[in-house]
Length: 135
Length: 334
Image (tube, rainbow over all chains, first blue to last red; front, side):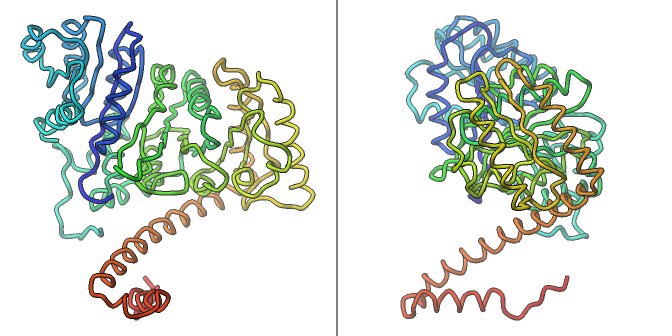
């Protein structure tokens, strides 16, 4: 178990969205890629996510959204982390139309993983987001 | 591993370890979190943190929470620490979950049951065992030290779900709470050696379920027999209390908080606390030494199988030869 320490990733569902099956699959994919997944699960708030990222000293946070709230809630998480002084990339997973991607990128979202993203794309998406911050 | 005195102090982000320790002691959670990461990752920065914190400790009551998988350790830990935070204490939780032996990855799921505790201001850190057996991780004592130095009290260490023999927590905590549930076994199970022997305190969780009274009775009978034979773990001030709880509703949690405080008070008044803390230090030295020896042993075995020497002699002979080589010629005096 020597070598580079594992990437620590916080995974959460934000707000009123009760569908966590996809997030559980992602958690398992990242675990099997050797990452440590701090799984928060359903009905998290901006505050509980920021608290978790801070206390867990996470390298990256993944938010799953299937409720079409990504254009509002994505930037809100990015801003809340920045306000707390946490330089941690945010990756959004879920149903995000292609035309929304530039707006999310402009808001500072580090990556978007759509439904049906293959396993290696999920792993690479998280790794790339971490690497881009030089963590 | 050892930090040379002539080296520059390690810098983390834009702050030195000393600055991080000062900030953590001033209440900055991000600094405490970063120190925990340094300790967990090991190596020279971890040694630096240990050097900066080991004189600043023994202010926190360290409480170990252990028990079988699914007994309700996380939910009960959350309920207990939420209550204490609401009373103005500053609790922290170290929650340990297992790493995959195949990939090293882990799913750390304890926070799922700790949303209310997070909101109440409890500091929660999840960690993986990273290959360590015994129910905890190698870095746990060092991480407890960081939280203690940062002014958290109590520091609650929640183990992985354990079977009967993973009892590392017994030497990592001042007070060990064992969480059991109704239907976990009969009086014979209760008298087997292992987990139940290291308890300072029992919670019979899910006490709204059938057979809760039976579980309590079996524990009482087991403790009666311990009284009869005079069997008690070192530094134990008295017979362990048994508290019935329903963690999901908060039932019995006030009583549990009282029992945890009572145990600390008994440790102090009986003079046992110093014994326990000396035991904690010795156990940490032992665990670090075991780790170093294991690494040296693995390296020696690898080199013996590479150079072919292991193929020409009996396995026991090779082991003895390697042990002589690893241990020979030095003495213990520091």
